[in-house]
Image (cartoon, rainbow, N blue to C red):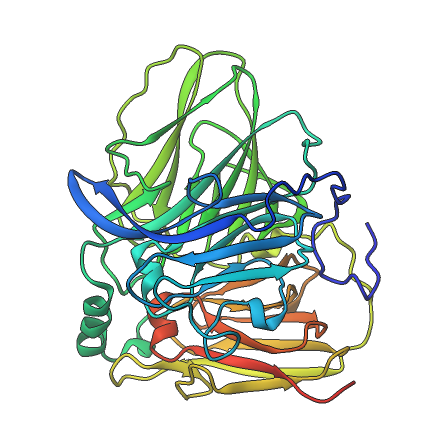
Length: 451
C-alpha cells in the first residue's frame, strides 16, 4: 500500500462503507456511574456507555462520528477519542479544545472519522480515568469482515479502592529522588481487571474448535505497563495503535499504557480452555480471560504471577508498518527532554512542569521530527493528540518502524518520531501515565502561521 503525502498517516487502509443506515441522527454516548464487584467488594466507578447500553462504541469506517455526549455525573468531565484525529475543538481536552462538559450537560460531537482500528475513549479531566472513565472505541474497516474470524475486545485497567486524589497526594509526599532510581511502578494496586473482571471470576470467551480469533487488546491502565501472555497458544501480532504491521509471531507481547495491539490466534483442532493473561510490569498482580472451545474444564488461575520484566524496545525494533510513507525532507526538528524533579513528585519537559504550556509550535504542511530523551528512572508512554506518527529512531539507530499514536520510552532511553503537521489546532502532548501527567508531564503543541 502506498500513501500520498496527503494521506500520510491518515489510517489503516480500508474501503469506506457506503450503505450505512442513518436511522438515528445522534445516538448517545453516556458518561455515568456504575458499581463493580472487585474481589467480593462493591466498587463505585465511572463508565462510558454506548448507544447499545453497553460500555464502549463500535462503528464502521465511512460512518460520520456524530454522537450526543451526555454527562450524567454530578461533576464536570470531558472525553478524548484516543486514536481518532478530529478537529481540535472536538478533541476533548479542556483548556486546549472545548470547555469541560458540565454536570447533566449534553453536547453533540460531530466530525468525519478517517481512522479504522482498535481505539478507545477516556476522560481528560483530573484523575477520572483511574475511576474507569474509559471504554473501547472500535472502528471496523468494513461492515462485513474480510476474514472469517471471531473478534473479541479486551479492556485492561489497574484498580484501587483508594481515592485517586489520595494516591496522588501520597506520591507527592513520599516519592523522593525518583529520577535517580530505575523503577517500574510508583502506584500499588488492589487488582488488575480485564473487561471489569478479576481472575477470581474471569470472562469466559466461547470459541469454535479450531477457529480463528482476533483479540483487540487495549491497555486502559492509569499507570501500569503490561505483558500479554498467550500460554500454550501462538499469536500473530498484526496491528498496533490501530495501524497494520507486518505480522510478528510469539507467545508474549508487551503493551504500554494507552497502547493497543491486535493479535490473531488459531485455536487447536480439539476442545480446550486456554488462559490469556495480562501480567503487570514489575508487580505480581495480573488479570486475564479464558478462551474455551468445546467441552473443556476451566481451571482456576491465580491473580498473582511472576512480576513482569520491565518493558524495553525489543518489540518496537521488530515492528514494520504496512503503510509506505513517502520519503520527503524533514522541515522541523525538536529535541525534548522528559524530566522529573526530586521535589513533590514533579514531572515535566526540559526540566519544567508544564500542563497546558506550549512545548513547541509547528506550521501546517511541514514534516516534523521530535526526539524524546527520557532523563528519568521511569518509562513514559508519550501520546500526541490529533496526529499519528511514524517511529523512525530508537536510541542511536534509525528504524523504519510502526505508525502509532503512543510510544513507550523506557527509563534512560531515547526515541524519535516523525509526522506531517496537517491537523491545525492546539494539541496535547503528554505522558499517559495518569499521575505523571497530572504532576506536570503534559504540554501543548500549537500550530502557527502558514507553511
